[in-house]
Amino acid sequence: MPEERDVVAGFYGATQAADAAAILALLHPEFEAHTAPGLPCGAGGTFHGPHETLARVWGAVFIEYDTAPYAETWHETADGLVVVTGHYRGTARATGRAYEAEFVHLWRVTDGKISWLHQYTDTARWQDALAAA
Image 1: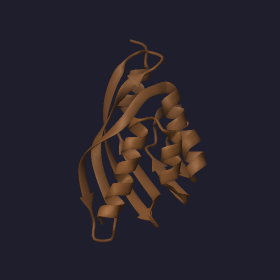
Image 2: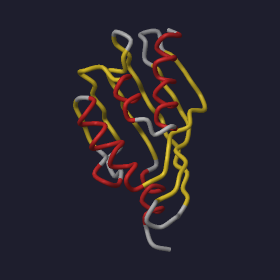
Image 3: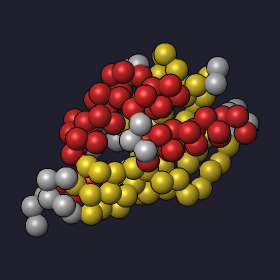
Image 4: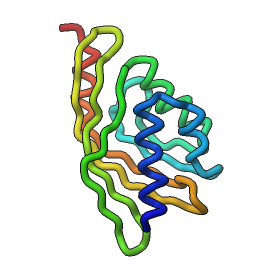
């Protein structure tokens, strides 16, 4: 399963570089994302397809935050699920407030592309960064 891990690792590099084209290149045409309810910017929920997810999740978040996910632990299951834990780190653009929020990402890779993501994160930390001091 090293190939799955390499594909997923490419996602973290692409988001840290804020490289939308690289993110899209990693996603399967039938990509599906389940993001944490309560994420700001309307970014929480279920999204279908690379372009919808880029616009409504990552694009929406990048408008409000200078942020990226940083992977810390990696686990692979026998059936190919890649489980990554780590922290989002960044700053809310409107307030200048820094934040750090823990995450767990569950990934599936199909035909060498990321086909599925389920994200868990501490959305209160995200919201707090947007709140006026």
